[in-house]
Length: 243
Image (cartoon, rainbow, N blue to C red):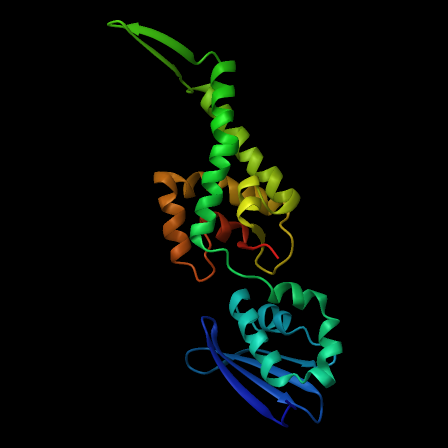
């Protein structure tokens, strides 16, 4: 469908009202963001020939990533003619990567945590407990009780190894074993690969998120438009489906 001269569209987002103007004569797109009183707070103008719609909406206009991705998809579908603009849009690899981001959802993240616990932390618990001398065997009233205690310095070691596992795996590939199995990964809010520093921050705060069997992290995620737990907010990260 050809782009009409002076085509104007309005989108309501969590960051305010977004107005998009497409001018075919000058081959430009203009994006404006207005606050609740309809006062302009951000603006950007780019050429259609080189535009990265998600970048303009997210970085320049301040629209949250997932909303920017949705708006960009609508604009491409409604205003970009494949015959005239298809080849140029394919040249924007960054936008294609961002537009494929899909929120992982809380259920998948919960399953990933459970898998990491079964695959890594349960065996690690037994190894640390046995190596630290936490194993015991008691005979009481003709019954034998066998178990492992992990406390004190052993508990701190287990916590450090657990955090190290998350930090190393996520900073290296964006995903732990559990996340890989369910097909999700961690990225920066801008869609870029997770940095080591962000991995450290989000997993140190995991100690708080994990309180009461991850109830704190669950509440934070459901109250966030991007499903961010406290660690994600502190590290400016999001969890998305792998593509």
